[in-house]
Length: 359
Image (cartoon, rainbow, N blue to C red; front, side, top):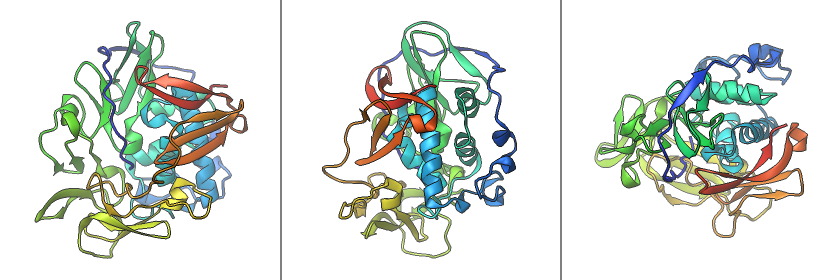
């Protein structure tokens, strides 16, 4: 999945009293995917069952991404990768298989995105994000942490009450904490904040970033489901792409008319950056050739360079504009059955993003 930067704001220890909610009752569509009339075959053995995203048309993929991300931001706040722009890019990687054919989502990540495009209420969203239980903050104050009952969920508490969650599993990660704050990382617990070696560990891709943060991911979440060395003579690793076209491995990409071609894992892969970034204007650059900033991040060429969207905004009461990678993603909150757009502070007050409000 897309690699997001990790912010490490100061915060307090997060501990949670858990209870099992009875209000998060799923709709018929969620309980029985075949009841959804979307023109889509619902069984795909390659993605461990559930909806076959490869049968979504590009327009359906965009509509489902807007719905999933608008509801996620409204009900769980635009915390981290819940921010509308970032969520849209990640959601389109999942739903638009034609634009991302070599790294289709798998396993838990597929199941999470499958859950979110079908939500009809905040209770439904909570069931997707917190499958074990809805956590309650143990104390007042603002802090982030990891919910132990839902190990792949990073949570934020603001003045007590119910915690809001960022599902790290949507990007193939888990939650890491050192007891002071939580981040989505390539390893859980304290190990995710004390990375010492970039390596493959089974399907896990560990990559040590700034300050010892493991900015990797679980390759079981995408592509062929394996972590592999890109080249035994070069110090990098990658998630193996779903492809049988061999090539000379290199952690870089070449761009041509908005398409990025690369070979980080030793097999050829391609991304339709223009489609993933939803850039409709002619002549706008959507793909940048060259080495990957992170050698395993096959999505990094997809970016609108200088002069792109840089700050979220609300347009009137209902229009939401979310920025990611220089691209502007939009949605009308009212059309999704949600409340007006608002600017919301998250990450212990260090981030400000636009989000629809809960209905």
